[in-house]
Structures are given as C-alpha cells and as structure tokens.
Length: 151
Length: 156
Image 1 (cartoon, one colour):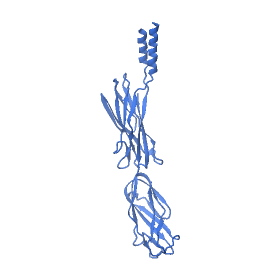
Image 2: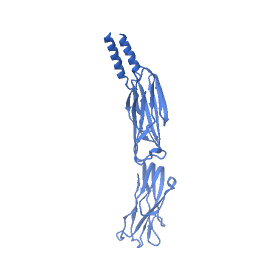
Image 3: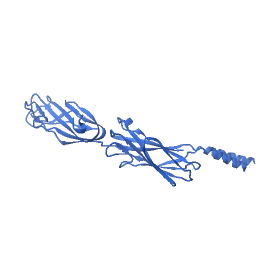
C-alpha cells in the first residue's frame, strides 16, 4: 500500500513540476520584410516587394480553448532624425487551423482570437506590419516588432 | 492503486499552462528616396556695365533643377564656385552668388543671392522644379572668354 501511495505522490509531483509548461510552442517560419509604397507614405510587408511573417503554434492546450493575442506593433528601429512619434503602426494577420480560420484587418491595437482545444492542433499564421507616415520616410533601416502570445 | 489514481487527479488539477510568446520582427530599408537632376543648365550673360556676369542678365538663363522626394529629406545647396575662366582673367576679386526659388510643391522655398551654403527641407514631393540663378560680380570687369560657375545640390 505504501509503495502505491509513493507512486501516486511521485506521479503528482512529476505532473506539478510539468505544470509550468508553456501554453503552446511558437515557431517562426519566416521573418517579415517591409517595402516602400509607390507614393512613399507607407512602409509595409503588404506592399510590392514586402514579405509577411509566418508563424506556427503547436502543443496547444487540449483541455480548454486557446487565446492567441497579436500585439500592436512597435518601432524599435528607425534612422536618426526620423519623426517616429508621428507615424501610425498597424498589424494585420490571418490564421488557419484544421477546423477553421480567422483574419483581422490592419489595426493599431492588440487583437486576439480563440482556437478550440483539439488534440494535435496546429495553427498557422501570416502576419503583416505597416508603418504609415504622411511625411514619408528618411533614408535608412526601419524595424517593427509584434508580439504573439498564446494563453 | 487508489494512490496512483489520486496522484493523477492531483496532477491533472495542477497543470496550469503559462503564457508563451514570441517576437515577430519586420525590417525594411528605405534608400534613394530623393533624386536631383538638371535638365536645363544655366547660361550667364554680361551686364550692361560689364561688372556682372549672371543668368538674370539679358540673354542669360536660369538653371532648372528637378527634385523628386519620397519624404523626410534635406536639400543642401552648396556655396557657388568658379570652375573655369579665361587665362586673362585673374580670379580672386570676384563675388559669386546664387539665388533660387521653387515652383509648385516648392513654392515656399526662396533664397535671395548668397555666397554661402544653404539648405531646405522637403517632404513627399513629386517631380518639382527649382530655378537657380547664378551671378559673378567683379568690379574690374571680365576678360574675354568663357566662364563656368557651379553649385552642388545634395539631397540627403
């Protein structure tokens, strides 16, 4: 009897130690590239020459629906002298899984969606970022960042 | 056996997934956002009193400079200089000056005659013309021959 209890407690401790596992596994399948629009007011991955970022989410929670959040983008990289405070930063995305799909147009705010708790569910995402500047862009390198979170 | 079951139940209740997050980054490089061209070079003519050789004198012609900008650029107009003069002319006493004025999208840009380097900012600008005038003033007059003066426009 004591052995059984020990086995039971050991199983519980093992599971509890594994209880801090992340809600999912996120893997980038491609980094994004921003390109300048013809009129010079937008720098976006949806412009000609731009490339959207790809992301897969695996190992999702099978006990309850998963919430995927895509944050509003930030602009951590820009040339010196560029008026970064006067631009508009937006993110758009589409997501698909075996039982459904969703998409969101360009937005300046955090956006989220739910996917069902299905075993072996894999969610693929395509994410676009866009910088809009009515005054145009200085010559140089620009970098945006969006955080994708699953919970 | 009961212990194993109990342990598993405790284990199931204790699984609390934590947030998982990743950064998705985008980069892009903006280059050649500004183009400057000179479709029409200027022509200088001698003033009636013989002391000024300039594009605004009768028979002279202002230079046309076209500028295209995709925004956030600065146009620098360099100090004018004498590039060539006849052998009989002794440089050093003359004053070289330029003035310029923009058209349409650059209508607010205007610079009176100056010998100094100047600059102005441009934003998004379709093909727009800047008229540039040049003059050389020399109280001792000018020797016969061809004179060439220049200024350098830089967009950055």
